[in-house]
Image (cartoon, rainbow, N blue to C red):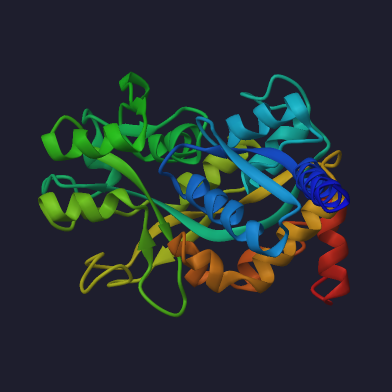
Length: 330
């Protein structure tokens, strides 16, 4: 009888221990951006790696229309929702510029995973410059995304008659099928810059090239970016894509595009220990991240922490900043 009682008590203790362990896991939803997009993929990578590095945290992905939409969504639960961010969102959200419904001064960066280059391309051999895009069918990603609102603000300045054009705002899947079927003439393409190897376009590019081969890239005049920067009150940074950066002779010449940093952040209300853990993953687990997303292969401290003039310490989450200061990165 005693032996049976002890066994029962042992089972009960073990069960209580498992319950306590389950209750100790802190769960957070991540406003991750467009399904299949770069931010969604690297948010997934972080959610998988953190299972190994910090099992006390569980990150569950929540699809949103863009990083702008992610910042807005996370404002609904500031203490429990990390979110995808861009450098542009960190500039616009605190000021409450459209589409942000109000000023969100407490949004912060945890770190960036990719230096994303935003370009435009076509399969129409007659379209060689932005001027040739006049009257053509332009497909962009969701309005509240880098390749939506921002892209049109920039390229429309180089397209004659753009005020009479209405680009289609949609998702990557629709853009891909639209380009393949000839419904869309010109579309955006996000490309991860990699100083150590080929630059890596978003995943849909592989399916596009399998169907139609490599496209023709259209250079974006830096003057268009300068004019858009003044009008939008945020900075669009010109960047050169070298000839052959993506594949042999792709692009077929050096072209201009613009830079956007894509990363993960949250509001100051987000627990500091979570922000610290994510910052540590970004710096110390890049090979693990690369198992789940190609951007992990091109990460560097220059990517994770842009220069102070672009990302001052005041715009870094306190938990992440503590990690960076401990390591001497800031």
